[in-house]
Structures are given as structure tokens and as C-alpha cells.
Length: 203
Image (cartoon, rainbow, N blue to C red; front, side, top):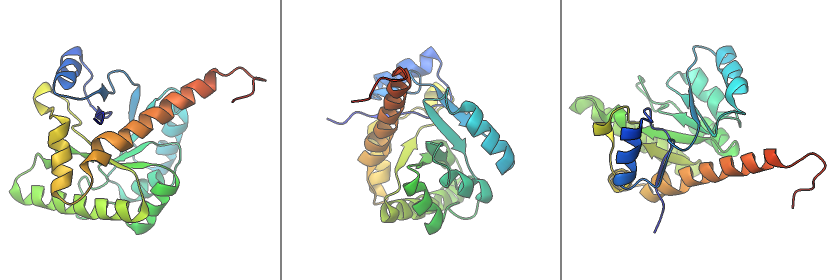
């Protein structure tokens, strides 16, 4: 049975974390140090990436700006580019960016709260998601989906999110289990590597 991980919760209060566990999430960023970055330009984003990389288990850039989406895909220090389509009339990434994200192991994150729109806007978001996931599958770019919950009532069970991704023709298992699980394992590996004393050979 797969383990489900929502590593981009916006609220990690004890109430939200307890509810998340009750509805089936095995891991949330309640037990991880997930750092969300926002920036107006590349200089600001680069500075924040370098400043927060060592302290963060998971480093997330909240996308939407086309130039910064591109820079995020090119940066191997970021774990996740979240909602690249936010506020846009297009998916926010293209085939070149998807390929670069794959090379840098940067996951594209879909944010369930983006669907909290009226019917027409919701349809547009789902259309963007299909295009994003098509690119991700073509270029082997990791992708995930998060509830991004700020309040308890925004939480959804992992099986609901899995079913949503499955319903638009892509791998829900990859989005709620495999990709976030790999990010967590990479974070744990990095932490272990940092604990190895200088002069001690890694085996």
C-alpha cells in the first residue's frame, strides 16, 4: 500500500496536522521544514534560495511569473515549483522548462486551492493542469499535487487528490505518493550526508 505525502501545507498547526493524519496522509510538512519562497525578480529569488537551502528540508517557490518560473526550472537547489499557472492565461511552463526541471529534479506542484474558482476559471485551471502534466510525462519531470491547506476544512483525503489526477488522464499515485516520497528521501539523505564527519568515507 503506498504512503501518501502532502508536503506543502500552508498551515502546520496541531489541529490541521492531526486532521491530515486522520484522513490518510502519512507525512506532511508538520514534521518537515518546508520553506516557501516568493520573489519579484531573479536577484531576490536567487538570494532567498541561497539563504534558505541549508535550513530547508523542502524548498518551494510559489510560481506564476513566467521569467521566475523559468529560473526555478533551471535551479537544482529548488525542490518544487508550485502553481506555475497561477494568475496566468497559460500553463506557466513550456517544453524547454519542463525538460530543464527534469534535468534539475525540480518537481512541478499543483495546488488544489487554485480550483477554488468559479466554473469558467476552474475549467481553465484544469486545462492548464492537463498541459502541465502532459509536458511532465513527456520529459519525465516529477510532479505532485498538494491541498496547500491553510485551514482544516481545506484538507482533502489523498485518495481524492489521486482520483482527481487520474480523472484527467495522469498518474495520481505519482502525484500523491511517488514524487513527494522521493523528495522526502532526498531530504533525509542530505541530512545524513551533512552529519558525516570530515575525513570519514561515505559507504
